[in-house]
Length: 216
Image (tube, rainbow, N blue to C red; front, side, top):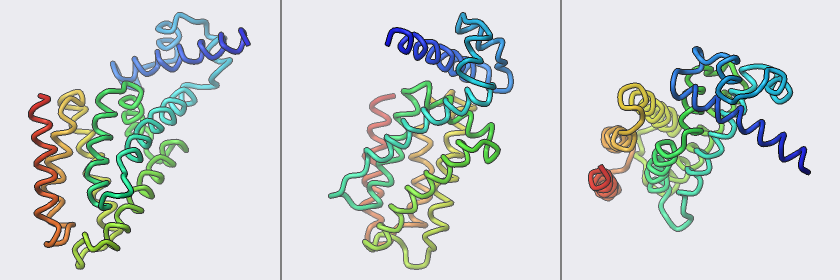
């Protein structure tokens, strides 16, 4: 048990060191030697746990995305309308990314690898499927415009949110992510939500914006 605990602690030091470097200088600039130096370990210790730099990145993607997916899922309430769960879910995700360095590094790695890493590719698929389930429910509940395609809604909303995260990370180190999500949704909602539901969601979004302003 002592050896196992020591091994897990070493693995954690490697991952945490890599996360710090990725958030500071980016994945391409962070070499294995840098990770080893930051973790204050030997090369052998690193290779005992990870066969390559990409293997370290994969572990970060998986752990960070567990946090992000968990946040999105936790925002869904069975008693709430599906579209409300979508909107609320993105703000809960924004909070999770802003508060968690692992989640931030994971987002950066998703952009680095795209579909060239199995974990990154799977993550995009899971996020798309999770959102599609909620969009389908919103359609069944009559909250979507009848002239929009559900698949188009999913792809557009997902692209807008990832784009907002990218710009926020590049220009503000992620500090204004909630505000950027709010602005994107302000534009998207009239194109997605039915006329009968639109005013409600504008008010719902306004309440989220007030929370942003009060926390700034």
